[in-house]
Length: 91
Picture 1: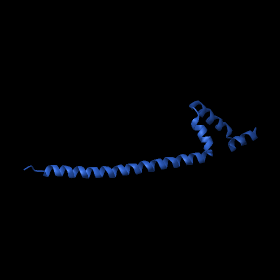
Picture 2: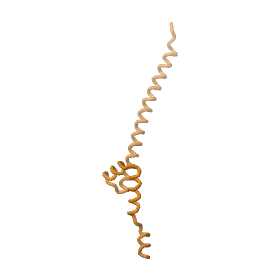
Picture 3: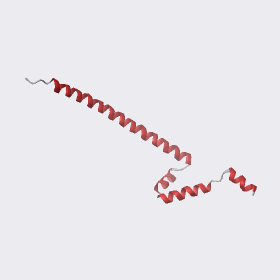
């Protein structure tokens, strides 16, 4: 008669490993969800900090690289600091 002890041991180990894999897969999915949620929160905060509307963000995303650089540079030109204003008054 054949001895199935070794085969049964392999099957038991295989089942344990599959169970562990299922647990790890669930943990990976949860971590991916948490990462995506944090990314979305960061993007939302950056857009709010910049004072952008959703329409402005969509337009920015739709621009090509050169258009984005031009838009950023024109935005920088529109900002005048208090020091700049004080310098102009002194002239």
